[in-house]
Length: 302
Image (cartoon, rainbow, N blue to C red; front, side):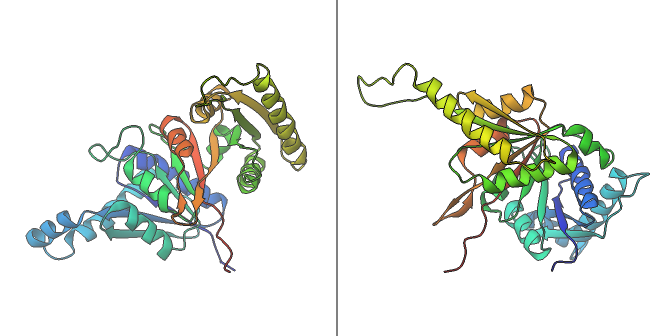
């Protein structure tokens, strides 16, 4: 049995990563666990620093700066954590973050959606994207401009609704279970959302029956009602059916219903393993709230 859970928070010293660090600390405190803070140095910059200032100079500087960043972030209120560790890696950010997660036996990664100026990708940071495409542990992505909670209890105030998109295929058990557990812990409402997509056909002359969309909505409402009824009595759950493109409707519903957290699953492929689907990627681009991305459970050994 693992003694204490561990949360990993990669930082690049930007305001975005400071907000992510506050969330990571709040989660670690709630779990009575530890926090690992990591940063990744560019190998070319490290080589230049070695030649001008001596071997290991940049790694030592990064370690000192991480500790300063941490103490500035929590000035006046040191978080109650099982342990705080600082790791400096060198290489490409995403692979190194995942390597640190493996070495630290991280149970969760918390990172900002975008990094410091100059290393950004339009809407969604390339480092966060690559981590999500390869991670085997859950990842919380914090939105641009979110300064994070001042205290752990502030998370409860910010997350009044936990939204989980449901595709009604029967493959959503883990997402609904995790989202329900988070909603219960935070005293929030679990919002189960299904988006009915428009019916399209490439066949010339084919048109679906006029009432087909109404029938599909009715089926979705019945299925969601069953999921709501299946929740434990301690979980307050609601259902909502929307119509349109899932990647666009999910962020809209999150904004309209004041959801503070979206829980989504990462897809799985027998050839590629865990990878981020297009809907999850687009939601991360458009949503302005926390997103928890869950990798698929490991495949049992044959």
